[in-house]
Amino acid sequence: MISKTCFAYTRVSTVKQGDGVSLEAQREAIAAFAERQGLNVTRWYEEKETAAKRGRPVFDDLVRSLQRGEAAGLIVHKIDRSARNFSDWARVGDLVDSGIDVHFAHESLDLRSRGGRLTADIQAVIAADYVRNLREECLKGIEGRLKQGIFPFAAPIGYLDQGAGNPKIPDPKRAPYVRRAFELYATQTYSFRGLLTELKRLGFRNRSGKPISKGCLEVLLSNSFYYGTIHIKRTGLKYQGRHEPLISKALFDRVQAIKSDRQHKKQTVHNHTYRRLFTCAGCGRSLYSERQKAQVYLRCHTKDCPPTSIREDVLDAEISASLRSLRINLADQRRLKRKMQAWINTRTPEQDRNAIELQLAQIADRQERLTDALLDGLIDKSTFETRKTALTEEQESLKKALSETGEISRDEHAMRKFLELAKSLYLLHQMGDPPQKRRIAEIAFSNRTLNGKNLCLTPQNWLQDVDGTLAVLCGGAEPDRTRITEKIDELEDIASWSLSDDFDVGLDRTMRTA
Image (tube, rainbow, N blue to C red; front, side, top):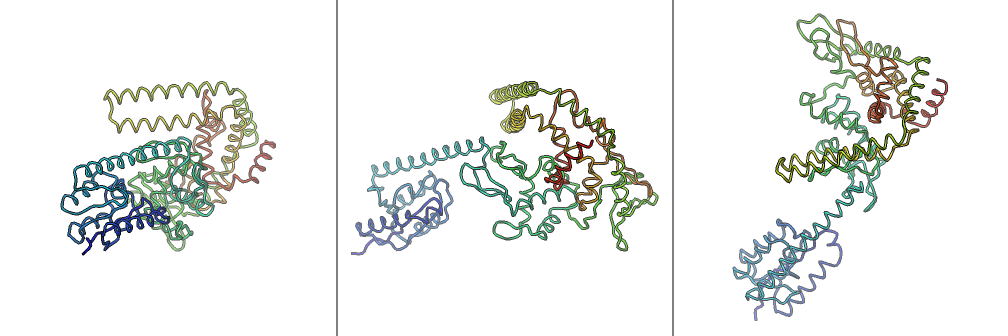
């Protein structure tokens, strides 16, 4: 008696499951079933893919082979091993209708009979429903983790996984490179390709030990995870993360602004320190940086303008001289310290808490009205998600501020650090590398023009006098921690070395002297 030829199909959902006993157990059950039924298995198909969605390559190849008549039957361990979605189950039904005998080793079902086909259809529906329910439960678990501030997926480059339920931690090998990538791009002296070349030269490698790709760098520079916010693109929602940020939000926002500027130079040719930072007083256009006889010159190339140029080392010296003249004298230091302390003394935790709670209540009311507008059809879902994300981000920021109310010493420390950093701009400029020097010139001077060979540098308002500094620090009647925090972040991004223990000791000594 000639036995009927059949194909056998085994499947697990993940590669990890395939390393266990599941595939082997299915194979043994199918082999035993074939022996009992007198079937001859001529080819085995093994797959490690979920059956929840269509598009399994091995299963597709199996169906095509059966449709070509290469075997008379198919043996699968169980119904849910063949399909967990209605589309693939319909293909199994088409095989039965075309005369292919489909057997399930675990269930004794005759798919050629009406009752057997109905029973199989019911079990297929149950398998599909199981997948939908499992998906919903998984999404609930993911949402719960996100609300706790934990990223439940693989850590982005620059961070390391610490197991389920634990926040990511900075990768000591790659985190410094991630931070450096943001800092270099913020100088506007690098295109994506230029920055990629520089990072490769510095030794930035991915987890497999290979240089990072351009696509990886683009994703990295757009990832809000690095400043502490988890953004889920599928839903558009944002969550405050519990992981340690690698950069400040001010630096991240600056990088996004540069990326969105379509006029930004696409390819970096020369990374001159002050390229495109100074303008001609005559025509208002940016000065070009060019190298002549081992010296870098900034020149205006407009034909109608009089000769306008300056050597880069001369420009650097004039910036240093201007920063030196902006140093706060001892009398102003004392006055500034007294006013800062007086402002701190007027604050009470109750006032801060009441003000923040009022703002939180207003946001809750706006969220409720936003939901009503969606239900009433006044706005579409896309607009709803965008506004909801903005409100959620503002809400998380206020909750964080509420948890810090009463920390007067923290505000005082931040103000003192801001004062010392502002006083140290000259020293930071002297010791900084070209990108740091460029950024200091950008934040210290609002007007940077060249008239012939005469350089005009107008200090920013917060550096012109003590009252201007106080306006930044204390900024009006209502206590506002954001203004000083942003300015401190701006300076700390330039001078991360200044936040060492030695610097804090020096800061305390300076403030006692003042």
